[in-house]
Length: 249
Length: 309
Image (tube, rainbow over the protein chains, first blue to last red):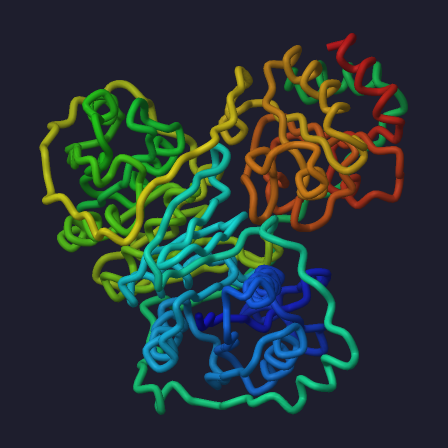
């Protein structure tokens, strides 16, 4: 079975971003970029499916700038077999990304597509669901367990009230939650080997996809700052403050 | 302008987040209709009809909608939604699961987790784990939006008298089926609706030690939450996680116990009215957002706190 994994290049999760002075966005100049943490979990899950003999080929795809090749090489070092970059210098919205991924799905015909549930930059949590809608496939979002058997996949999902399990007909879309697995680190020999694995570069035009969006970001601002309060010396003082100053208990 | 709000419910009762979503719809302005899709949802529809400001309740009562499977519910919402100016759902795990699928079917981009309404087409939403706030304008004919409940004070659950109307053909895509669920059972208030939340982190050391927090929470009538570290370590189940990718809470009082304060955790609780941090590490970043910080061993401080409140 062929598995397609989508990954996104985003600001590293340890970086505290700053809003640009002109409010046009956040300042990403000279900031460390990495693979989105949920996408790392998606790659890991695909590699584990291959190690179990369920997956036969892992194709990793990214939609983004030329530099996203770094994240694709990381995925190749972790165990993906080949990579596709759909190159776009513009920041694309989720629907455009989903349409581009749909074009790749049509071309590659994977049985399972695994994506992160959300990217930690835009925090949209949309692309996997949109890809499922455009492909007409079932979706198992926020997955904490994925089990393929025959022509079905059982996905256990993290939901507000606890956990839910659904069964989907293949092909299907899965989006990963935090506790699906713990991603491995790439070994040095595998990083070297990944440099020789195939990486194809496509463009939205070549795929015949319009990347127009109905959303327009007008401005980006820093959130209202919350200032540090005071340190209390004892539990008794804390209770006194909460009762008489904050009046919350 | 007419706005369609997707009711959040469990086939038995309307979830509180629906009231916050109706509040966001009221800020946009125009008639508000509420869709109740599910199975055996007569009582839910009746309750929805009483929500203040709701003009009409649409009921799609069918086995295909019993478990909110997005493959079945999204086509229904997309079909009904075409005639509306906006489609709104709470940014719950259901809303997040279903609404992007609706947006794609309508060929529009969704606006996720709005925290304020600037005008009928312009909204504010947090990005980068709440470290930036984007103002986003939508040119879509039907604006598809999820609503972060903490951004909007709920409307009254009583006082309305909307008409109730059965709608929609059954959509059963046949792509998915419900296998089962394990829902957490608790007598404490629901995390996202509680006035006081007590949360524990890695500093709790193990799941058994959470009993100290449960005891304190029960004295305060509080809900109990956790940081990602505590959930990852297996101390408590995932439904207790507060943070960027867990639950977003904004109670009157948030007590963070043994939580260092990673930005991903702060993203889920920094809009709380009063924040208390109890941590033995005085350098912990949580103190930078806390109104009251106590540098102490939590195993001494929590039992004492429980006695004094």
